[in-house]
Length: 424
Image 1 (cartoon, rainbow, N blue to C red):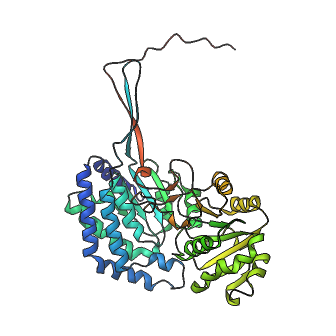
Image 2 (image 1 turned 30 degrees about the horizontal axis):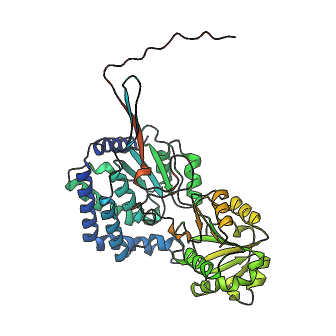
Image 3 (image 1 turned 45 degrees about the vertical axis):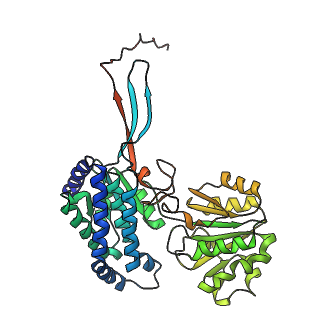
């Protein structure tokens, strides 16, 4: 194993982090926020090297790009993490047994968390601050598109850790080779958890090749269903916001579903999308409803690729359905179980939608853009889990801890009763 020493060092760092008090952890995070602001121009210069190597038309360009404002926002987010309650040492449950034995279920760090991600250098800051607050070391495997940005950020983090006398292996950035990913994914006994953040292809690769436990995050194939009793004003604003607020993020919608008896409202619903030159892939009924009202160069007949695609771009598909059941069946077939929305004034239908649609976040008359740890009041997140084991939805501090049972007593011993004979 090429990285055995690296993994060993991360484990030692994790063990030391487990002994840090919350006051010191918060002081380190505040110092990191200050150092990030101080080194802003250095980070931007390195980020520019990455940007210069990427086509501006690439949907990942916006994710890769750092600006002075974005770095100041990152520093603000790090300070926010420092103000959050510690997720460690919480008593989740306790009981005193009849023999006087006291059992406590207490939150503890995971240990070593590996993150594999693509062209999003802000993730480097996010992951470190959250893992550090939660008492875990992190091993980061970023994409080659962000190699200079990530290296600069790790240098800033390590500078602060060393200043406080903390093991700099608390945050490790791996090189970009493919075989390095394989080592991380198979580091059983060294790495406790892998979290992939990125495209569907990346997540599939991690899931198919990992021997270490994985929590899937990131891929967001999201729908907004405009029901027959939907409000046109709400629908127009929600669709525009959910699609165009920031197209490169996982909570942006990729598809609109509309009841056929509301197709006459489709031109008004989509009117704001013209401002952003959103390309619309429409099925036949939707195409006919839009063809005299939407720019010809932005309106395209939908094929099978229009459904179940995370565009990460100014692109949107639209499908007309005859019934609520058909809409839910379409969502069930093509959703990545990230975020799904319905726009309706019928409370019974909205309630039914929340029960029948299987997704981490289900919205009624609200933009899917709110699927975010900060927006949920969690302070920050490490990703959006689209699975059901351990964590689901925005994964904040509490979700990146595990737990152990602590049993206290006064000399109790177990005396079993007489075993029953087995009848054959």
